[in-house]
Image (cartoon, rainbow, N blue to C red; front, side, top):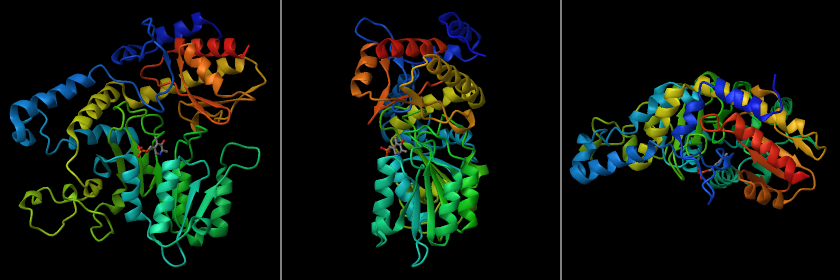
Length: 420
Ligand SMILES: *Cc1c(COP(=O)(O)O)cnc(C)c1O
């Protein structure tokens, strides 16, 4: 299916229906003006060329309208978050009422746990995957502590078996068989940031619900990468950020999903703010809190419009390209990268990411035996922006909107040169 040559890579680019999208992004360049092979979209996505005009529109409306911009701006600020909802809902496979853009990812995770982690004296444990992203682990541990529990007793890690890097679903089933009656919440990161493993979200949700647990996902590495089909999974909640695969700029706002079965549960515990209050009466200012129906009811503050403008710019590109097309290209692009790495036939190299495209997103985590961080430095010097994770893993994440098949070829060629 693939061939190991620059000509073949060029042919794939020529046949690629999405190849013109690369030109819609600013590609970082070295001091000689040569574009880097940028494989770090899993950490910070690149800037769309349209982002600045979306931001300038808001700056201009603010300059000319002042406070009137809330209602009179080209895109009025009062309902601005609503302009993002439909496109964002498509990207995560949810109904629009189930999705809202707000806050940072970790803030949203805490807000969701306030509502969906409701421990009792016997059912209070939380399961996370063992190599969870540190912020997720800190958030979960601090929630446990807040409720008077400690991690030693109440935090269960879903671990890979000894000598393996990936988590097996049957091991999660086993944990639930043994301790499910004491588990209140499963909070799993998908796709895993380190291994690139995409977990079976629906199976995990069904398993959790069978034992009466709440189930939530962190899609920081999933949103804009895989199609999580959140509504169909039946998960209770999910959170994600928009600065990785969703190209919305450093520290940009996060996304939040609340399944529609919880949409009008106004009695549910939640930390509230005025932006989650009924829009009709929000500015009467003297009413009791009246939560909006759906995910919007979890909003706290009036949101930063400049950040939302950047998200809108990016989502418009996703909408133009169509997420199914993006994912289709992604599977081929990462498949080509995998093929080229295998072609190096270097016994020191092992791809720890699952081989099955259904079980991964675009990222490959490449373990290089007895390598250290100088490998990463050399890759950077050779014009490749990648990511290093101790002790010996290079993570590369070809983003289908702006990475080319040629990029894959150059990466493999430069890696080979460095390893020799
Ligand atoms: C990137 C990432 C975060 C970062 O959290 P912020 O609140 O956006 O700083 C958290 N969790 C996971 C799994 C991530 O990949």
